[in-house]
Length: 152
Length: 435
Ligand SMILES: Cc1ncc(COP(=O)(O)O)c(C=O)c1O
Image (cartoon, rainbow over all chains, first blue to last red; front, side, top):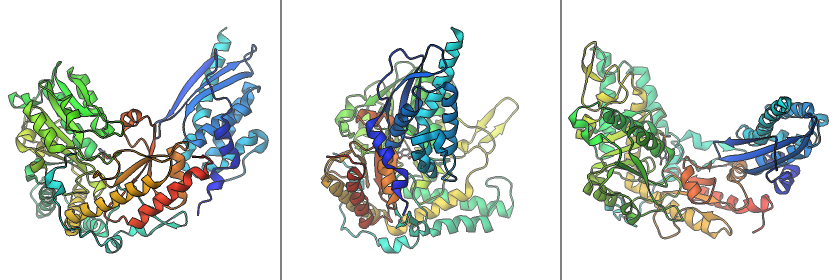
């Protein structure tokens, strides 16, 4: 039997209910809408950087989707707010690498913290997109926000 | 609801010998996540019996050659097999041989009509194609419940021709009746397209009533028969539709082949949207004259072994007897509706008990996303479909984003249905959602 608890870790079920960061962000520097066409899951994520343009000051999202996609957005918010954009990029790369691992290897806990709970998702190819949804939106936001910051 | 008398003729319930049938399907003997597989996703794609796999293989081992091209003995053998397959399918759906056109799948079949009509509007096809010419002021009617395959081609046709796309409204449960159709179909209607059996609600359309209404206004009717031809005796001539589409892979047949049915005189007048080799009589440097149906539509090398496989699937279904198939599925549909309705807090899409429906049930589990429902069922060896089932507008209309669908077929047992509903009842507790 496939161990469902490997996929639906306590932390994921908990985040899917707590939904940290749920709610549209006021005056975002960038926002991005991401849709998973196979299931219709969607998220709009907004980001605000600090005055220096190198730190994530605030993040907010509105979304509708499965527990994996919503929990992932929630966990992402906890990890990212207050950190350097350079570190956020590392997080995104690390999270993506973990989800592409198809269950192999050990995730980098020092980098990913609580987000290692999503390692189990990587074994379920059809669910990887769910977990990536908010991270892809974050990546797009970062590019846009930084482009704006350098323009001013 | 009006059922087409042709299809609901009462007959003594004889059902099917499901245990014997299952032995013909190696796929079903698998385990899924440590449980015996309960395959409840035949509405998306059906599994194939050994007879179909063998027929394709035997054809490829002994009879494969270019069809309708050249004059050798080998070509004669393959062409005969190919055309025999067409005759078999034609007999199965109450059609003449020239009324059956091979397509890639049902989606492609619908596109052949939509694209041909766009060509007619663009001036191709001569006066006999007038019946297909749309212009501003003309209306194309579909229902709010259509599969994207029976919606988007019409959106495109409307955009190309200036015609207006209009929608038969559905009730809050996703079903609709002849009165709803009559509220939209009128003198400007040129084409009406709808599913015979909905792939989301299982709703059975009042086909003959709609045909009568549409024809009274001079409109053509296209029937999306994807979820009916595999499951119930279907006779297009008796239904009176002008066109119909269905896919082999949903009726125990191969991938890569579908069927467009059309009344002969209409097919002969419809401009072929895809042109090329094998479709013509005379070709000059400047122009080409097209063969009558079906050849005019079958451009390029055709899915020959797939046609042979589909014909074997048809013979398999005929051996089971489509009336019995239908009765078996009526029983399973009743069981599905009955069992699902017993689970507290679960919303069943479509009509409830007492109304006949296709043997499928789409459900919403409040508080748990369909993906998570599907994952839970998957861990119990139960294969279902989750998502919008290619019917986003219908889900939006129902106030839903995605549902979980179980669909049955000839090899589905009552026990599998009960495993589905028993597991469904555990979903909300697992995800910690209280009633
Ligand atoms: C009602 C209905 N129409 C159209 C289709 C499209 O069939 P296909 O993907 O084989 O072209 C399907 C199946 O997905 C269906 O259920």
